[in-house]
Image 1 (cartoon, rainbow, N blue to C red):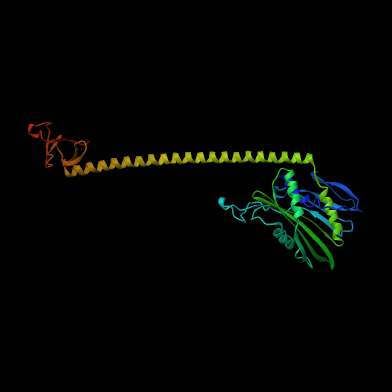
Image 2: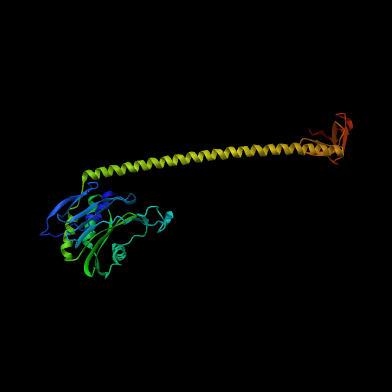
Length: 341
């Protein structure tokens, strides 16, 4: 994936370059990480290197002619990487990712994206005017071929925009070359260009030569791949640790809730037992005042006059006879009810 970030920035115009006579070139190397080399005029002042804003990898550079009247540039570290919204997962356009360089937006063509880009970046300059904008089919084919060589299938749109503005009353020519590369649900804009006070054709050739000779250092690429893999492993390990901590916290919470529920159940049962004791005591007190006792036949209960050991109830009339003797011959048709203890 890291190579993909360089693809639109440096290989944007490869294959469209023409011979640049009269210019002495020298190979310049990324001074920060040694990530890439490219050829630039030997007398131009160059600032270049990798930028890593918010965890993204951006290849950027500016080369300025000795008289300061012409400059070429490639890359913009502030351009985000976009993902398309997905309503199925509740992902909406404009949702905050917590990272300004990763955003959710519907895919745009290079023409639409960089038309806005040029107006926002240069539109407030004195005398600004948009001179022309056109699709760049050769650029589309080139980027697709370069991606294919890296085993990737991409969707590409590309555009070229020419504009003018003035600086202290002097006319300046500007050109933006922008591409939008789509990989599955992701899309990435990339930009290169130049600004000059004189012949834009000559400056364009110098830019093209720089792009044509751009190369990624293989040793750096291997180290970068290892770094990314290590970061992914660390991220996965940290994620697993966080999930384990959350599971442990959840289990502890569940255990506390079970203990609390058990304690509440025991407290409630104790209250019920106490209430039953109180109810029984109250019932016995009321029975004492009324001179009654509670009897049962095993399935039913009833109130009868107290003072006897046994009670016999006529099942047809409900009349009862109390007696201290357990059995009498004249009570053989009665049900035997006992005092409920």
